[in-house]
Image (cartoon, rainbow, N blue to C red):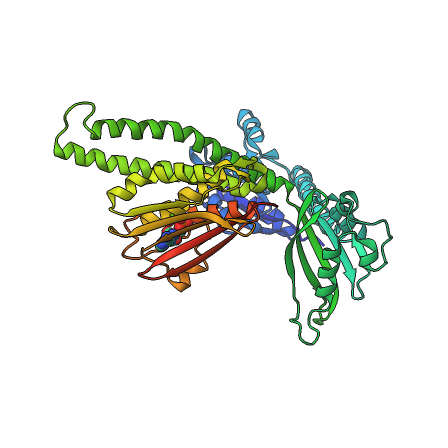
Length: 493
Ligand SMILES: Nc1ncnc2c1ncn2[C@@H]1O[C@H](COP(=O)(O)OP(=O)(O)O)[C@@H](O)[C@H]1O
Ligand SMILES: [Mg+2]
């Protein structure tokens, strides 16, 4: 039911206010009055919902009426304005242009007043009816969107896959994405999941979820895992369906195809790799040029200059090491994909890698000993991977051994394995750190290691390369005594 519209009469002529007021009150309308545009706007602001129609004199001082119409228009007010003017000339046309509904001459007869007013009232009623209809329609739509057909349409429009079983493990719902993925083995809905789904892991996870809450199992157990089906990698979230009484009545699996995410990661990895490559050459050139100056080959330099350039040289070396780590990291992330397997003379590669580090060992007054067994067979492996293993293990041993210490590298055969042993008389590693030592970016923070630079990637890289070659790593360490790492690589895979 619509209530009668409330009317605000805005007029500074008391006789006019009286006349309009009496007429409107006689038919039971709620009437309020305002003497100026300011008062009118104030009223609208305060009781916006309580004004439906405004009878607005166009003869208020200072063109007040126009500003009221403009404000109402700007704030998208629903108030209908019936302008009143003595002439209904130019000013009335202007008011209507600005948004007033109509204009009535102030010399109106009662009949003329009601003809005009009835029209604006009708307009008011129509607008309110439209609003009510719109609201009703919206609520019907909301209800509509909850019916089963609409829900299924929504599920079918999803990129992710959804599978639902009942309490007994029968497949009762799956969306179009599941059908298109080829996960189904052709059975119809309503059959046990193990008959419907090709992926055995998914079946067992869904069944396990149904049994959650049974003796010995946590209630509401859910599973997040990675499933591999054919070429696709899927991330699966499997949850129990729990009804309002807290009873498990089914299980629901949401599967997300990771290939897009993988593609994004690939782009990032390629970018990292490209940047590292691009940095490597200029950094190496920089290092060489600084070395030439530091060594006095480009002319005499004073002690202060030598000291500063010496520090720059160390920082540049650090950057080169980081860039090398980033490039090697790519290797372990890509796993076997980047390996180039060829028969390798490991003794020669080890000797070259050690030569690179002998200078820094000398500077630190560390004895670096290398024992390479004679007649070692060739090893089928990735050359840069092998270099990375030697460089990382030997540089760690040198870095984490205090001045005056010793580093020994042995390369020999142990059964069908080629064995690389790197032992030092350095700082050693605490037991608590041992389990993290192969994690990416893990570095031990202590008073002694604080000034030693590094990325924490070295051992993660070594582990990745050794894994890719199906080898093993063994580590023994005692704090204050030293560390020994043995890498064994199988001759035949
Ligand atoms: N031979 C070693 N002796 C003592 N600590 C070591 C040795 N090798 C590695 N570590 C510890 O393991 C951490 C991880 O090594 P690594 O992955 O090569 O990273 P980084 O050398 O860049 O710090 C090092 O920060 C260091 O604390
Ligand atoms: Mg290292």
